[in-house]
Amino acid sequence: MSERKGHPQAIREDLRRAQRLEYWNIGWSLSVIIAMGFAMGGSQAMKTAWVEDTLGLVPPIAFLVAVRYEARAANRRYHYGFDRVNGLGFLIAAVALAAVGLLLFKDSLTALIAAEHVTIGSVRIWDQDVWLGWFMLAAQAYATIPPLIIGHKELPLATRLHDKLLHTDALMNKANWQTGIAGFLGVAGLGLGFWWADSLAAAIIALSIISDGWNALRIATAELVDGIPYALGANRLSDDAKAVAAALQKKFPKCRVLMRETGRYIRAEVVGATPPRGFDVKRLEIEGLQDPWRLDSVAFRP
Amino acid sequence: MKGNAGLLAAALLLAACGSYPRDIEGTRDRVEAGRVIRVGLFPGSLAGPDRAMAAVYLSRLSRATGAAPRIVMGAGESLLARLEAGELDLVIGEIAADSPWIDGVAVIEPLSEHRVNDRIIGLSPMARNGENRWVMLLEREVRNMRSGG
Image 1 (cartoon, helix red, strand yellow):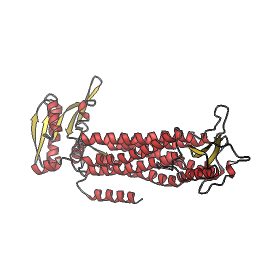
Image 2: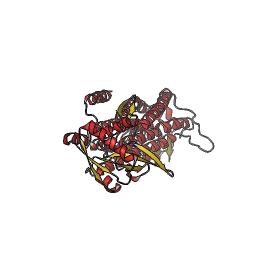
Image 3: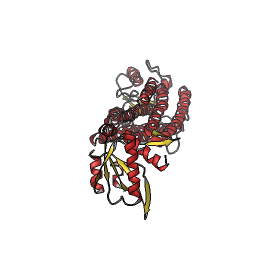
Image 4: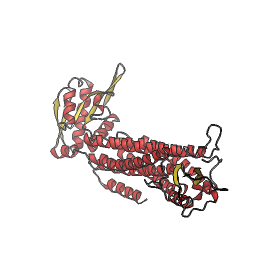
């Protein structure tokens, strides 16, 4: 594993951008949490959306912590460096995403079964009685904007950085803006007299969040138990790993090639061969490998 | 961004509707159409000034809706259960701020309140949950009454 200090040159600029984006993410998320907290009143959907927005802070914080650790050099206690902190952060983010989905689904299902009728009262402002639902609608509309923009900006960075944690954060942002719209439609539907609108919209979106969370959880677990390198957001071998396997198999035809992923890096092992004289992984030519920085090491087991 | 434009359009459309928010079970429409408000009163809590206050409140509601109150007296629990089931439109009585009924029905801000030891007891109108247009009217009349308007 890598004992280097810092990140590979090829991804430093993108990592800086991703860090900046995550600081913005945290700032905007806090503003949404405050706005929703003031407006939520008695609406169950608003409360659930508020919990979701709060849990949405987990992936960006996990990412910022992981990036700092990942840059540290190996030391006396951690001989192989800190690349896997990203994987640990990914697992935490995946658990948060799945938990949000389950929480939202439970709440909406309970409300549907109990046929809950939600009361939203009014407040007097300058001698006018204003329905509190208007404040909820405004807060929900505001709550959809930051995650929509930030999530959209995160996706290409996550792809270039092969960062599953950042990708999960983009999914979390997707979950947040979708829930914002569900909450908006729910409160608006409630205002039209449809008691079920709120819970039904929330339940449908919760199922999609659970699916994203479950997928992320499966991939995060696979990484932690030395599974094959997965493609971003998909349950299959990544194209880079395919290219590495093919190149090593070609060079060592009678050997077995094993691979695993630590954070954003691929580690390969050739079983049944000794390293050729002067073998240097950095000079290995691999056709189809989009990002050569991802291949961190090739080990040999005679 | 298309989604947000849609939300804005929906909000504007809703704002254009005069009867927004609506009641889930249509209480206010039924009261106005039937010209009757089915009211439950807690007998024990309506003595002295509270009784007069409830009477003034009911006459204000009558003026606002064009409906006459049809009053039923009964024990608190049974009236609130009937309110929850939709057999009554309004219950007026004393209720504590930490009563288990606080979530079961919509408790409007009180007409008056007093303290019994550590508890705050309010003389409050109460409505069925989810009747948001009706609840807004009940709230408006309490505020008008308290501000002398």
